Image 1 (cartoon, rainbow, N blue to C red):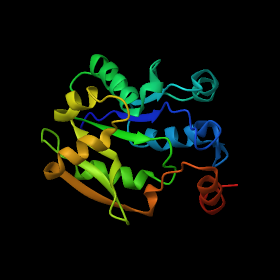
Image 2 (cartoon, rainbow, N blue to C red; image 1 turned 60 degrees about the horizontal axis):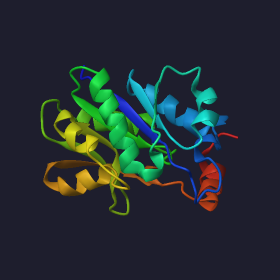
Image 3 (cartoon, one colour; image 1 turned 30 degrees about the horizontal axis):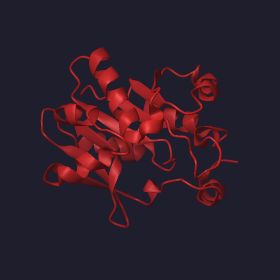
Length: 200
């Protein structure tokens, strides 16, 4: 089996949401617990990158077998948080075949979609297995081959993994996520998704 750690980027301040997005209710848990549960069905090695509200979030993760990476410079942007996390993982994990990057604000992404990303991936290649929405958007969750670890580790500011996906488009294999890839950035979108999809 390929060695593919998964990373959940959950370091942002959720300014548009007006409260910590990570702690919003979802499926009888918090959103971050829901996301961690999904990732644990994909990978035994789950890394959660925290930044804003880290002290509030940590207690909700104490019963989960995850590795917490706290980025003190999270305010510099998501790219900064992600690259910090990747550098830590490179030091801790040997023989990585690939790495899955996911974001806190996509609660509809499920185990089945992640498994399709995995089954499409072939270790040792120079490829990115990215998610494609029904509107033509291509991005995360995405599975990057180990070839791209250095590029991920050098992201800065607001440059997310999407920058690498765009730059390496010829090496990107798209997996349809259709309507699973909704970004939950505002209270209005959260309420709509919660009413439609969350267990209540």
